[in-house]
Image 1 (cartoon, rainbow, N blue to C red):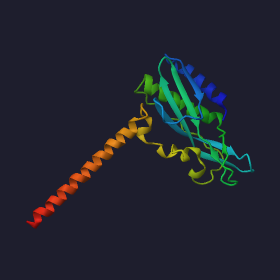
Image 2: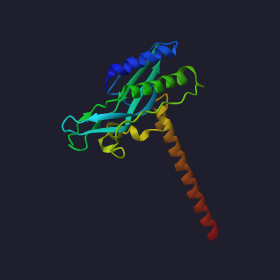
Image 3: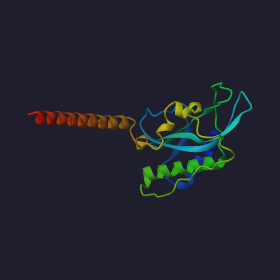
Length: 200
């Protein structure tokens, strides 16, 4: 992963956007959904090369996670999840090689997420899809994906993941679970009462 390319592309597009606040992007390989802020994720296409054997492979399911915060200025922390080789089984996580075009598309989507969230809620810009190159080796192998192992990829598309507060989703799901249990108990009581009425 070329951090400077990401930062350069981000700086260029932020400058064009003319936001009233200053925004910076940094890579954080320890980023997880444990902190407050807006989480935003994308899948992009990348190539990988094993450090221990001649194998190389492509993936269209490379998971990229962003954490957005705006206080005195805007900050974006980014983590790109890695994959390991399924042939030599060394377990070493390889960095993805992402083309400049796909970096540009991913940053474009990120900029418009910032725009819609913090500045123009009615922005209707369509997301740019990642460009694929070469041959894909079948379906996504979850066992060799860092994002899948840590439980990130499987949550893609979950509306709870973009909560402004990290604790929001567990609280909401807890409330739903309590509601479901209450409904089950009510149904059981109703059924039991019906049985008693029928015996009389």
